[in-house]
Image (cartoon, rainbow, N blue to C red; front, top):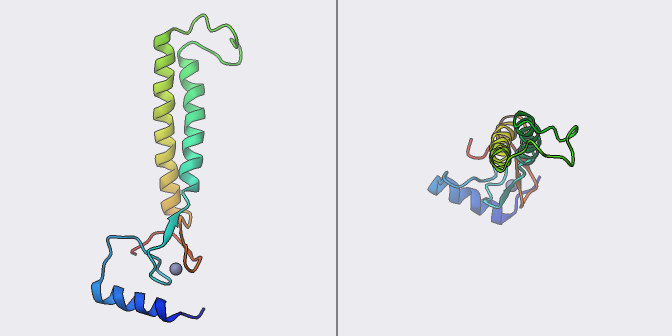
Length: 121
Ligand SMILES: [Zn+2]
């Protein structure tokens, strides 16, 4: 790995200013990083599905057995199910975010393509 003079200037700038509020690459110091959020996206999707199945079931509606005949499903139950799905998505996303931050290299530097777990540490 060779550093360009631009990178060296960046590193000198960080030493001088020690700005740590913005996430930056621990390899080259660039602010041009992206969050992958694989776990967050996956968790949100799985949470939605799990919540949908769970809330429809608890509302007395079995999407497999009663498909096409939602006689026991009131508008209130549907709203409750939707609220459950939203909550499930949020819970799944929060869980996924934890996975991102603790297990995966969630950040990728757009300058040097270095993947890392958490910035500023
Ligand atoms: Zn970098």
